[in-house]
Image 1: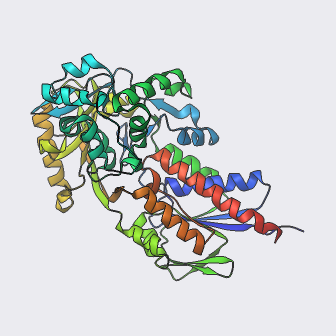
Image 2: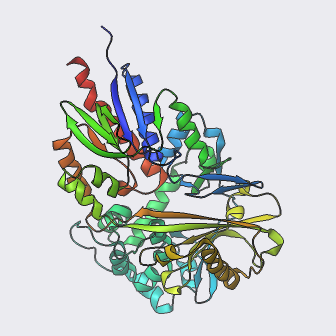
Length: 478
Protein backbone atom coordinates (compact mmCIF):
# COMPACT_ATOMS: atom_id res chain seq x y z
CA UNK A 1 0.00 0.00 0.00
CA UNK A 2 1.40 3.37 -1.04
CA UNK A 3 1.99 5.70 1.88
CA UNK A 4 0.40 9.12 1.83
CA UNK A 5 2.98 11.93 2.04
CA UNK A 6 3.14 13.95 5.23
CA UNK A 7 2.73 17.67 4.72
CA UNK A 8 5.28 19.87 6.46
CA UNK A 9 4.76 23.63 6.37
CA UNK A 10 7.55 26.08 7.13
CA UNK A 11 6.47 29.60 8.07
CA UNK A 12 9.19 31.99 7.01
CA UNK A 13 11.37 31.86 3.90
CA UNK A 14 14.56 33.32 5.32
CA UNK A 15 17.76 31.33 5.71
CA UNK A 16 16.32 29.43 8.71
CA UNK A 17 13.13 28.45 6.90
CA UNK A 18 14.84 27.49 3.65
CA UNK A 19 17.42 25.43 5.52
CA UNK A 20 14.66 23.72 7.49
CA UNK A 21 12.84 22.86 4.25
CA UNK A 22 16.04 21.49 2.70
CA UNK A 23 16.72 19.23 5.67
CA UNK A 24 13.10 18.06 5.96
CA UNK A 25 13.37 16.90 2.36
CA UNK A 26 16.78 15.29 3.01
CA UNK A 27 15.80 13.51 6.23
CA UNK A 28 12.57 12.12 4.78
CA UNK A 29 14.48 10.88 1.74
CA UNK A 30 16.97 9.10 4.01
CA UNK A 31 14.02 7.33 5.67
CA UNK A 32 12.57 6.52 2.23
CA UNK A 33 9.32 8.18 3.26
CA UNK A 34 7.19 10.60 1.18
CA UNK A 35 6.80 14.24 2.15
CA UNK A 36 5.34 17.39 0.65
CA UNK A 37 6.78 20.72 1.74
CA UNK A 38 5.32 24.22 1.67
CA UNK A 39 7.25 27.35 2.57
CA UNK A 40 5.21 30.48 3.26
CA UNK A 41 6.98 33.85 3.07
CA UNK A 42 5.42 37.25 3.64
CA UNK A 43 7.76 39.30 1.44
CA UNK A 44 8.18 39.17 -2.33
CA UNK A 45 11.49 37.30 -2.26
CA UNK A 46 13.03 34.39 -0.37
CA UNK A 47 16.21 34.60 1.64
CA UNK A 48 15.22 36.94 4.44
CA UNK A 49 17.92 39.51 5.21
CA UNK A 50 20.32 38.03 2.64
CA UNK A 51 20.25 40.28 -0.40
CA UNK A 52 23.11 40.62 -2.89
CA UNK A 53 23.11 43.53 -5.36
CA UNK A 54 25.18 43.46 -8.56
CA UNK A 55 25.90 47.00 -9.77
CA UNK A 56 28.58 48.49 -12.04
CA UNK A 57 30.93 45.57 -11.42
CA UNK A 58 30.46 45.68 -7.63
CA UNK A 59 29.10 42.81 -5.53
CA UNK A 60 27.16 44.46 -2.72
CA UNK A 61 25.65 42.78 0.31
CA UNK A 62 22.64 44.75 1.54
CA UNK A 63 22.15 42.41 4.50
CA UNK A 64 24.76 40.21 6.21
CA UNK A 65 28.08 40.22 4.36
CA UNK A 66 29.74 36.98 5.53
CA UNK A 67 29.65 34.14 8.04
CA UNK A 68 31.94 32.67 10.69
CA UNK A 69 34.12 29.92 9.26
CA UNK A 70 34.45 28.11 12.60
CA UNK A 71 30.71 27.36 12.76
CA UNK A 72 30.36 24.35 10.50
CA UNK A 73 26.59 24.36 9.86
CA UNK A 74 26.87 26.74 6.90
CA UNK A 75 29.93 25.02 5.46
CA UNK A 76 28.18 21.65 5.73
CA UNK A 77 25.12 23.00 3.94
CA UNK A 78 27.33 24.59 1.30
CA UNK A 79 28.88 21.19 0.61
CA UNK A 80 25.53 19.44 0.46
CA UNK A 81 24.39 21.97 -2.13
CA UNK A 82 27.54 21.41 -4.19
CA UNK A 83 28.73 24.99 -3.72
CA UNK A 84 32.01 24.50 -1.89
CA UNK A 85 34.05 25.70 -4.87
CA UNK A 86 32.25 29.06 -4.63
CA UNK A 87 33.58 29.85 -1.14
CA UNK A 88 35.99 32.77 -0.77
CA UNK A 89 38.08 33.91 2.19
CA UNK A 90 38.97 37.39 3.36
CA UNK A 91 41.99 39.14 1.87
CA UNK A 92 45.04 37.91 3.86
CA UNK A 93 46.58 41.40 3.48
CA UNK A 94 43.62 43.01 5.29
CA UNK A 95 43.87 41.47 8.73
CA UNK A 96 44.17 44.74 10.65
CA UNK A 97 41.11 46.07 12.45
CA UNK A 98 40.92 49.52 13.99
CA UNK A 99 38.95 51.08 16.82
CA UNK A 100 38.09 54.78 16.76
CA UNK A 101 39.16 56.29 20.08
CA UNK A 102 39.54 59.94 21.11
CA UNK A 103 39.45 61.28 17.57
CA UNK A 104 41.73 58.82 15.79
CA UNK A 105 41.97 55.22 14.63
CA UNK A 106 43.97 52.81 16.78
CA UNK A 107 44.92 49.37 15.58
CA UNK A 108 43.32 46.64 17.64
CA UNK A 109 46.17 44.98 19.55
CA UNK A 110 47.34 41.60 18.30
CA UNK A 111 46.34 38.61 20.37
CA UNK A 112 42.78 39.62 21.12
CA UNK A 113 40.35 36.70 21.07
CA UNK A 114 36.80 38.06 20.96
CA UNK A 115 38.19 41.19 22.59
CA UNK A 116 39.99 39.27 25.36
CA UNK A 117 43.79 39.82 25.53
CA UNK A 118 45.97 36.72 25.17
CA UNK A 119 49.31 38.43 24.38
CA UNK A 120 50.95 40.71 26.96
CA UNK A 121 53.19 43.01 24.91
CA UNK A 122 50.70 44.19 22.25
CA UNK A 123 48.13 44.80 24.99
CA UNK A 124 50.58 46.85 27.06
CA UNK A 125 51.51 48.95 24.01
CA UNK A 126 47.98 49.86 22.92
CA UNK A 127 46.77 53.44 23.34
CA UNK A 128 43.17 52.28 23.61
CA UNK A 129 43.54 51.92 27.38
CA UNK A 130 45.19 53.91 30.15
CA UNK A 131 47.85 52.30 32.34
CA UNK A 132 45.21 52.00 35.04
CA UNK A 133 42.88 50.23 32.60
CA UNK A 134 45.60 47.78 31.60
CA UNK A 135 46.47 46.98 35.20
CA UNK A 136 42.79 46.48 36.00
CA UNK A 137 42.48 44.02 33.11
CA UNK A 138 45.45 42.09 34.48
CA UNK A 139 43.59 41.63 37.76
CA UNK A 140 41.59 38.94 35.95
CA UNK A 141 44.55 36.64 36.55
CA UNK A 142 44.19 37.09 40.32
CA UNK A 143 40.49 37.55 40.94
CA UNK A 144 38.57 34.50 42.24
CA UNK A 145 36.06 32.83 40.00
CA UNK A 146 32.38 33.46 40.61
CA UNK A 147 30.58 30.65 42.37
CA UNK A 148 27.63 29.05 40.60
CA UNK A 149 26.63 29.21 36.96
CA UNK A 150 23.76 31.70 36.99
CA UNK A 151 23.33 33.92 33.95
CA UNK A 152 24.46 37.54 34.10
CA UNK A 153 24.87 40.37 31.63
CA UNK A 154 27.75 40.20 29.18
CA UNK A 155 28.89 43.70 30.15
CA UNK A 156 28.62 42.98 33.86
CA UNK A 157 30.72 39.83 33.48
CA UNK A 158 33.43 41.53 31.41
CA UNK A 159 33.59 44.53 33.74
CA UNK A 160 33.86 42.21 36.74
CA UNK A 161 36.75 40.31 35.16
CA UNK A 162 38.56 42.94 33.07
CA UNK A 163 37.34 46.37 34.18
CA UNK A 164 35.31 49.19 32.71
CA UNK A 165 37.89 50.49 30.20
CA UNK A 166 38.20 47.17 28.36
CA UNK A 167 34.43 46.95 28.15
CA UNK A 168 33.90 50.48 26.84
CA UNK A 169 36.90 50.79 24.51
CA UNK A 170 37.30 47.25 23.11
CA UNK A 171 34.64 44.70 24.06
CA UNK A 172 31.55 46.88 23.60
CA UNK A 173 32.17 47.90 19.97
CA UNK A 174 33.43 44.43 19.06
CA UNK A 175 30.98 42.13 20.84
CA UNK A 176 27.86 44.27 21.26
CA UNK A 177 28.23 45.27 17.61
CA UNK A 178 27.35 41.72 16.58
CA UNK A 179 23.92 42.17 18.18
CA UNK A 180 23.65 45.98 17.82
CA UNK A 181 23.00 45.72 21.54
CA UNK A 182 24.00 46.96 24.97
CA UNK A 183 26.51 44.67 26.69
CA UNK A 184 24.94 45.44 30.06
CA UNK A 185 21.58 44.10 28.87
CA UNK A 186 22.69 41.10 26.79
CA UNK A 187 22.73 37.62 28.33
CA UNK A 188 26.20 36.16 28.83
CA UNK A 189 25.00 32.57 28.43
CA UNK A 190 23.03 33.32 25.26
CA UNK A 191 25.80 35.32 23.54
CA UNK A 192 29.25 34.17 24.68
CA UNK A 193 28.85 31.15 26.97
CA UNK A 194 32.51 30.26 26.40
CA UNK A 195 33.47 33.23 28.60
CA UNK A 196 31.63 31.82 31.60
CA UNK A 197 33.02 28.36 30.85
CA UNK A 198 36.56 29.79 30.80
CA UNK A 199 36.11 31.43 34.18
CA UNK A 200 34.59 28.28 35.69
CA UNK A 201 37.32 25.98 34.36
CA UNK A 202 40.45 28.12 34.64
CA UNK A 203 39.49 30.76 37.24
CA UNK A 204 40.49 33.45 34.74
CA UNK A 205 38.98 34.68 31.50
CA UNK A 206 42.38 35.50 30.02
CA UNK A 207 43.83 32.08 30.88
CA UNK A 208 40.75 30.34 29.53
CA UNK A 209 40.74 32.18 26.19
CA UNK A 210 44.49 31.58 25.82
CA UNK A 211 44.01 27.84 26.38
CA UNK A 212 41.10 27.77 23.94
CA UNK A 213 43.23 29.59 21.37
CA UNK A 214 46.05 27.04 21.71
CA UNK A 215 43.66 24.13 21.37
CA UNK A 216 42.02 25.70 18.30
CA UNK A 217 45.36 25.93 16.49
CA UNK A 218 45.71 22.15 16.69
CA UNK A 219 42.55 21.62 14.66
CA UNK A 220 42.85 22.24 10.91
CA UNK A 221 39.79 24.14 9.72
CA UNK A 222 37.88 22.73 6.78
CA UNK A 223 37.55 23.39 3.92
CA UNK A 224 41.03 24.56 2.91
CA UNK A 225 39.77 28.04 2.01
CA UNK A 226 38.90 28.56 5.69
CA UNK A 227 42.39 27.73 6.96
CA UNK A 228 43.49 31.31 7.65
CA UNK A 229 40.21 33.19 7.45
CA UNK A 230 37.80 33.89 10.29
CA UNK A 231 35.01 34.79 7.84
CA UNK A 232 33.82 33.33 4.54
CA UNK A 233 31.53 34.38 1.72
CA UNK A 234 30.92 33.29 -1.91
CA UNK A 235 32.45 34.45 -5.15
CA UNK A 236 29.10 35.90 -6.25
CA UNK A 237 27.88 36.93 -2.81
CA UNK A 238 25.68 35.36 -0.16
CA UNK A 239 22.80 35.17 -2.62
CA UNK A 240 24.61 32.03 -3.79
CA UNK A 241 23.34 29.92 -0.88
CA UNK A 242 19.78 31.24 -1.20
CA UNK A 243 19.73 30.37 -4.90
CA UNK A 244 21.23 26.97 -4.09
CA UNK A 245 18.51 26.22 -1.53
CA UNK A 246 15.72 27.38 -3.83
CA UNK A 247 17.15 25.22 -6.61
CA UNK A 248 17.23 22.20 -4.29
CA UNK A 249 13.58 22.76 -3.33
CA UNK A 250 12.05 22.66 -6.82
CA UNK A 251 9.49 20.05 -5.75
CA UNK A 252 8.37 22.12 -2.76
CA UNK A 253 5.75 24.87 -2.86
CA UNK A 254 7.52 28.16 -2.21
CA UNK A 255 4.80 30.74 -1.63
CA UNK A 256 5.73 34.41 -1.40
CA UNK A 257 3.56 37.43 -0.53
CA UNK A 258 1.55 35.21 1.80
CA UNK A 259 1.12 35.88 5.52
CA UNK A 260 0.08 33.32 8.13
CA UNK A 261 -2.27 34.90 10.68
CA UNK A 262 -3.32 31.91 12.80
CA UNK A 263 -2.09 28.42 13.64
CA UNK A 264 -4.50 26.05 15.40
CA UNK A 265 -4.76 22.28 16.02
CA UNK A 266 -7.37 20.40 13.97
CA UNK A 267 -7.68 16.72 14.93
CA UNK A 268 -4.10 15.40 14.50
CA UNK A 269 -3.16 18.16 12.06
CA UNK A 270 -2.74 21.92 12.17
CA UNK A 271 -4.66 24.57 10.26
CA UNK A 272 -2.76 27.59 9.05
CA UNK A 273 -4.94 30.54 8.12
CA UNK A 274 -3.54 33.06 5.65
CA UNK A 275 -4.30 36.75 5.35
CA UNK A 276 -5.61 36.01 1.83
CA UNK A 277 -8.47 33.99 3.39
CA UNK A 278 -7.05 30.63 2.34
CA UNK A 279 -6.23 27.84 4.79
CA UNK A 280 -3.59 25.11 4.68
CA UNK A 281 -3.54 21.85 6.63
CA UNK A 282 -0.19 20.57 7.87
CA UNK A 283 0.97 17.44 9.66
CA UNK A 284 3.95 19.30 11.09
CA UNK A 285 4.95 22.97 11.25
CA UNK A 286 8.23 24.84 11.68
CA UNK A 287 7.76 28.46 12.71
CA UNK A 288 10.85 30.26 11.41
CA UNK A 289 9.60 33.78 12.06
CA UNK A 290 10.74 36.69 14.28
CA UNK A 291 9.68 36.20 17.90
CA UNK A 292 6.99 38.88 17.73
CA UNK A 293 5.44 37.24 14.65
CA UNK A 294 5.52 33.80 16.28
CA UNK A 295 3.88 35.29 19.38
CA UNK A 296 1.06 36.80 17.30
CA UNK A 297 0.53 33.49 15.56
CA UNK A 298 0.30 31.47 18.77
CA UNK A 299 -1.48 33.66 21.36
CA UNK A 300 -3.04 30.54 22.90
CA UNK A 301 0.42 29.43 24.18
CA UNK A 302 1.19 31.89 27.03
CA UNK A 303 4.97 31.46 27.12
CA UNK A 304 5.23 31.70 23.33
CA UNK A 305 3.05 34.80 23.42
CA UNK A 306 5.46 36.22 26.00
CA UNK A 307 8.24 36.04 23.38
CA UNK A 308 6.75 39.23 21.96
CA UNK A 309 8.65 40.93 24.81
CA UNK A 310 12.03 40.08 23.22
CA UNK A 311 13.38 43.49 22.12
CA UNK A 312 14.38 44.04 18.50
CA UNK A 313 16.76 46.78 17.35
CA UNK A 314 16.59 48.52 13.96
CA UNK A 315 19.82 49.02 12.03
CA UNK A 316 20.84 50.23 8.58
CA UNK A 317 23.66 49.50 6.16
CA UNK A 318 25.00 52.32 4.01
CA UNK A 319 27.12 51.27 1.04
CA UNK A 320 29.28 53.90 -0.69
CA UNK A 321 31.42 53.47 -3.80
CA UNK A 322 34.46 55.65 -4.60
CA UNK A 323 37.47 55.82 -6.86
CA UNK A 324 40.30 54.43 -4.76
CA UNK A 325 42.44 57.51 -5.41
CA UNK A 326 39.85 59.70 -3.67
CA UNK A 327 40.12 57.88 -0.34
CA UNK A 328 42.18 59.97 2.04
CA UNK A 329 43.25 57.01 4.18
CA UNK A 330 45.18 53.85 3.43
CA UNK A 331 42.64 51.01 3.48
CA UNK A 332 45.14 48.57 4.95
CA UNK A 333 42.74 46.46 6.96
CA UNK A 334 39.18 45.25 7.25
CA UNK A 335 37.76 48.47 8.72
CA UNK A 336 37.07 50.08 12.07
CA UNK A 337 34.67 49.98 15.01
CA UNK A 338 33.22 52.95 16.86
CA UNK A 339 32.57 52.65 20.63
CA UNK A 340 29.27 53.94 21.92
CA UNK A 341 30.91 56.65 24.02
CA UNK A 342 32.55 58.28 20.97
CA UNK A 343 29.19 59.81 20.05
CA UNK A 344 29.43 59.18 16.30
CA UNK A 345 26.54 58.51 13.93
CA UNK A 346 28.09 55.35 12.48
CA UNK A 347 28.82 52.33 14.67
CA UNK A 348 31.38 50.70 12.35
CA UNK A 349 32.77 50.80 8.83
CA UNK A 350 33.91 47.80 6.80
CA UNK A 351 36.45 48.49 4.06
CA UNK A 352 34.66 45.95 1.92
CA UNK A 353 36.83 46.15 -1.20
CA UNK A 354 39.96 45.66 0.93
CA UNK A 355 38.50 42.85 3.03
CA UNK A 356 36.89 41.01 0.10
CA UNK A 357 38.88 41.32 -3.14
CA UNK A 358 36.03 40.02 -5.31
CA UNK A 359 33.58 42.80 -4.39
CA UNK A 360 34.86 45.75 -6.45
CA UNK A 361 36.58 46.50 -9.76
CA UNK A 362 40.26 47.41 -9.57
CA UNK A 363 40.91 51.07 -8.73
CA UNK A 364 37.53 51.24 -6.98
CA UNK A 365 36.75 51.27 -3.26
CA UNK A 366 33.60 50.00 -1.58
CA UNK A 367 32.79 51.02 2.00
CA UNK A 368 29.98 49.66 4.16
CA UNK A 369 28.91 51.75 7.14
CA UNK A 370 26.61 50.63 9.94
CA UNK A 371 24.04 52.82 11.64
CA UNK A 372 21.90 52.14 14.70
CA UNK A 373 22.16 50.15 17.90
CA UNK A 374 20.26 49.66 21.14
CA UNK A 375 19.39 53.07 22.55
CA UNK A 376 20.32 54.86 19.31
CA UNK A 377 17.52 54.31 16.81
CA UNK A 378 16.59 57.92 16.04
CA UNK A 379 18.02 57.44 12.56
CA UNK A 380 14.78 55.67 11.56
CA UNK A 381 13.10 59.09 11.38
CA UNK A 382 15.64 60.39 8.86
CA UNK A 383 15.47 60.32 5.07
CA UNK A 384 18.03 58.30 3.12
CA UNK A 385 19.70 61.55 2.01
CA UNK A 386 20.05 62.73 5.62
CA UNK A 387 21.43 59.36 6.70
CA UNK A 388 24.04 59.47 3.92
CA UNK A 389 24.90 63.09 4.78
CA UNK A 390 25.64 62.14 8.39
CA UNK A 391 27.58 59.03 7.36
CA UNK A 392 29.70 61.11 4.98
CA UNK A 393 30.41 63.62 7.75
CA UNK A 394 31.84 60.86 9.91
CA UNK A 395 33.84 59.43 7.01
CA UNK A 396 35.30 62.84 6.20
CA UNK A 397 36.37 63.45 9.78
CA UNK A 398 37.69 59.92 10.37
CA UNK A 399 39.07 58.91 6.94
CA UNK A 400 39.43 62.26 5.19
CA UNK A 401 37.02 61.38 2.37
CA UNK A 402 35.73 64.65 0.93
CA UNK A 403 34.40 63.65 -2.50
CA UNK A 404 30.86 62.51 -3.19
CA UNK A 405 30.45 58.76 -3.71
CA UNK A 406 29.91 57.41 -7.21
CA UNK A 407 26.72 55.90 -5.77
CA UNK A 408 25.28 54.80 -2.46
CA UNK A 409 22.76 52.24 -1.25
CA UNK A 410 20.84 52.55 2.02
CA UNK A 411 19.26 49.39 3.39
CA UNK A 412 16.93 49.78 6.36
CA UNK A 413 16.65 46.64 8.46
CA UNK A 414 13.82 47.54 10.80
CA UNK A 415 13.27 45.42 13.91
CA UNK A 416 15.92 43.05 12.61
CA UNK A 417 18.27 42.42 15.54
CA UNK A 418 16.82 40.37 18.42
CA UNK A 419 18.26 41.12 21.84
CA UNK A 420 18.93 38.30 24.29
CA UNK A 421 18.20 39.55 27.83
CA UNK A 422 19.61 37.88 30.94
CA UNK A 423 17.82 34.56 31.41
CA UNK A 424 17.01 34.30 27.69
CA UNK A 425 17.90 30.62 27.27
CA UNK A 426 15.66 29.57 30.15
CA UNK A 427 12.82 31.65 28.70
CA UNK A 428 13.18 29.97 25.31
CA UNK A 429 13.40 26.50 26.86
CA UNK A 430 10.21 27.07 28.84
CA UNK A 431 8.36 28.41 25.80
CA UNK A 432 9.38 25.42 23.69
CA UNK A 433 8.34 22.98 26.41
CA UNK A 434 4.92 24.60 26.71
CA UNK A 435 4.50 24.58 22.94
CA UNK A 436 5.46 20.90 22.81
CA UNK A 437 2.85 20.05 25.44
CA UNK A 438 0.06 21.81 23.51
CA UNK A 439 1.16 21.38 19.88
CA UNK A 440 3.74 18.56 19.78
CA UNK A 441 4.47 18.80 16.05
CA UNK A 442 5.08 22.54 15.94
CA UNK A 443 8.64 23.82 16.39
CA UNK A 444 10.31 27.23 16.74
CA UNK A 445 13.56 28.19 15.01
CA UNK A 446 15.37 31.37 14.05
CA UNK A 447 17.60 34.24 15.09
CA UNK A 448 15.42 35.17 18.08
CA UNK A 449 16.27 31.98 19.93
CA UNK A 450 19.81 30.59 19.84
CA UNK A 451 22.14 32.73 17.74
CA UNK A 452 21.81 35.53 15.20
CA UNK A 453 24.56 34.48 12.77
CA UNK A 454 23.80 32.68 9.50
CA UNK A 455 25.36 29.37 10.67
CA UNK A 456 23.31 29.59 13.89
CA UNK A 457 20.10 30.03 11.90
CA UNK A 458 20.98 27.16 9.58
CA UNK A 459 21.76 24.91 12.54
CA UNK A 460 18.41 25.76 14.14
CA UNK A 461 16.61 25.06 10.87
CA UNK A 462 18.35 21.69 10.63
CA UNK A 463 17.49 20.79 14.24
CA UNK A 464 13.85 21.79 13.76
CA UNK A 465 13.74 19.66 10.61
CA UNK A 466 15.02 16.65 12.55
CA UNK A 467 12.45 17.25 15.28
CA UNK A 468 9.53 17.49 12.89
CA UNK A 469 10.66 14.40 10.99
CA UNK A 470 11.08 12.42 14.21
CA UNK A 471 7.62 13.49 15.36
CA UNK A 472 6.02 12.33 12.11
CA UNK A 473 7.81 9.07 11.34
CA UNK A 474 5.86 7.04 13.90
CA UNK A 475 2.53 8.19 12.43
CA UNK A 476 3.25 6.45 9.09
CA UNK A 477 2.41 3.12 10.67
CA UNK A 478 -0.71 4.40 12.46
